[in-house]
Length: 173
Ligand SMILES: CC(C)(COP(=O)(O)OP(=O)(O)OC[C@H]1O[C@@H](n2cnc3c(N)ncnc32)[C@H](O)[C@@H]1OP(=O)(O)O)[C@@H](O)C(=O)NCCC(=O)NCCS
Image (cartoon, rainbow, N blue to C red; front, side, top):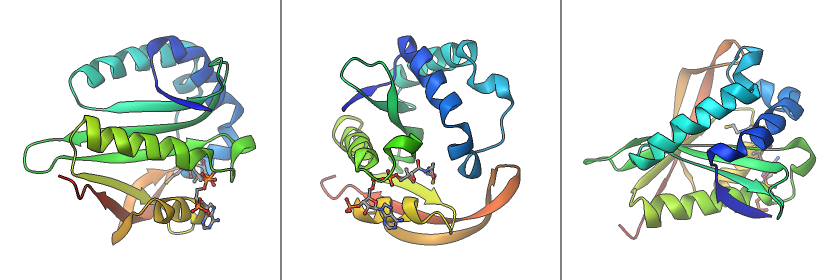
């Protein structure tokens, strides 16, 4: 597997990833119209993300096979705030057929390195629903610390869901 920044020409494999993993990701994702994951929609979104990246506002990554023929997992650094905060949110998912094999940890570790070493951020925030044990285990294994618990934090799959709040601090900066 290689981990690369998601670029506009990846729209077909990103759209295919979300189509193939729709039922796997649904319990942990916002409700979106079907058109959200169409090829056109991903083409547009990846162009928008390119602008965000150029302005230092987000960075999105995918893990792929060597030929970049399919997506193994995704990881996003979003909501970048600079100034006295130097922080962002982290989001991630792995294809059902690659779950539990350590690929996700490699992709997220790459994004963390990028956030700290290339973007100069100090804090990465990552939150999960209380019953998402895999997500909790992944964050723990990467050194994240629990910081709190927020009620009705995000609208997931059509319902407001509580979330456990976690963060990883850049000790070098
Ligand atoms: C959450 C998710 C990304 C985890 O991916 P994964 O493939 O299980 O992750 P990895 O195989 O890379 O595992 C990484 C670490 O998590 C740990 N882990 C995995 N499942 C675990 C579990 N059920 N309980 C405790 N720890 C667990 C592993 O032990 C591993 O740590 P280690 O290398 O120190 O042993 C994946 O289940 C997924 O995509 N779920 C659907 C989308 C989602 O929930 N996204 C996150 C929303 S907050």
